[in-house]
Amino acid sequence: MTMKFDIIGKRYWWFLFSALIIIPGLISMAVQGFNLGIDFTGGTLLDLKFDRPVSVHEVREALKEHQLENSTIQLAGINQGDKAQNVFIRTRVLTEEERKTVANDLRTKVSQFDVLRVEKVGATIGAELTRQAIIALVVSWILMIIYITWRFEFKFAVSGIAALVHDIVLVLGVFSLLQKEIDATFVAAILTIVGYSINDTIVIFDRIRENLKTHRKSETFSNLVNRSIWQVMTRSIYTVLTVLMATAALYWFGGETTKNFSLALLIGISSGCYSSIFNASPIWVTWKEYADRRRLQAKTKGA
Image 1 (cartoon, rainbow, N blue to C red):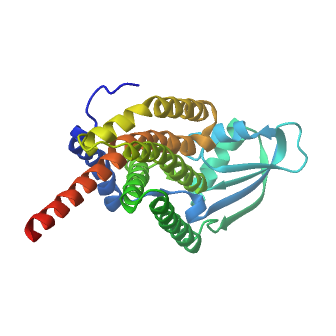
Image 2 (cartoon, rainbow, N blue to C red):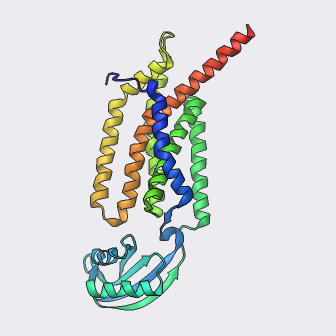
Image 3 (tube, rainbow, N blue to C red):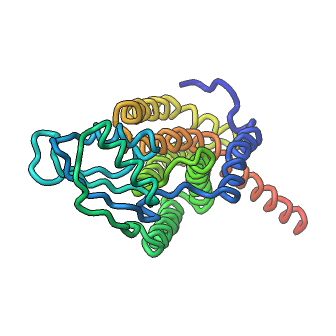
């Protein structure tokens, strides 16, 4: 693909755009926080035995009116295809009044049932596991910095990680603004986004490195990076569109339990493609030009 316009020359506009879409999310995270799911907060466990075999879909539809469609629903006992009489429902913490209302709706819309057990259950992802996940993410960034520094240079490594942080903060911000539920699948989505984003960034960095080997002094770093980005632009577009098509299909047809997971992927993968092109490489150019100016000033003073 030939160069159409000056991406690097307009880099400060891209930085401004990133700031404009990230700042509302940061404010939301500080003010209203996150809507943590039962994986983080614990919840109520209902063990029910229906008079007839019921499906997960029937139960979930009945729970939707109470904003409990993301609850964990498991069939137990003797299954008849995709139906069973024994059903485990794990929801957010319900008050006694809420539990009675939900039970009445289930009896009306699904079937009569006997309550075998009702109890409060703890979080499957506690504070300690959350802390370990954050530590693991930070350690992965450090290892990425070491590896990219070894294969490329330190400025490339920091620029790539800056793009990663951009993508993760954007996804977190959107989920905070929309108060979408955050559960175990969201954590998996974040890790997937990290892998995708850094891969797309490395492809561009690798082309820049190859072009640096034949770099002419008459060509500025901005022009070289522009040329490098446009050389892999077709590959980036094809890759992101292919992934987004599959993720969009998962979002629309995958059911309620995968909606937040696929939504996080849709936002993160789109952001990853954007940040790889419009953030990571421009950050490297800005840093490189600044370092060269400092070096030139030092030489001028020394002379």
